[in-house]
Amino acid sequence: RYKKRHRPGKPFWNAELDNLWAEMRTAERQFTRCQGSKRCREDLRKNFRNKQYAFDKKLRFYKRRHQRGQVLELEGLRTNNPQRFWSELNKLGPRRSTKIPMEVIDQDGDLTQDVNRVLEKWERDFADLFAGNNTETEFDEEFYQEICTLKNQLEKEMRNIQYPSNPYLNSPITLTEVEDALISAKTGKAYGVD
Image (cartoon, rainbow, N blue to C red):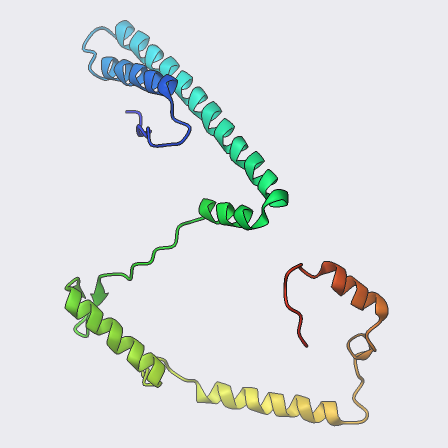
């Protein structure tokens, strides 16, 4: 059975695709409902495959033509109207969901979809998170002590006069480096000490 769905809501969908879709579906029904001989089934299958190929080919053609038009429009907007360019470009990306999940696992380990219990759970979890009462995370005190010791050891070595410094990192900033940074900076962005 052919799995593609009929989607006339697509911006590139037209009457020709409607007709090809209807022809393909009719050929598919004839093939799947055929009770005749093997030769009859083969002919109907071949007819269905040809209709399917014709539909897929036209669908790809119109979809690519539509997408090419979008690209050309965006290319024009990029130079003529950058603000609208970014607005249109953001519409092409994945959609962000603004809804919170309306099911949670409660304290008993049961999945609940009761709105009041879900909201209470969200409220309790966020209150614990911001208050620092999150007891579920384990803090590895031993690892923390190892890192602090290592950090102190490195700092002590760096203060040593015999410690070899990195000439690449500690050399003065050159005019060429400043020019390269300015050229690669984005326009319309604020500068700062960083």
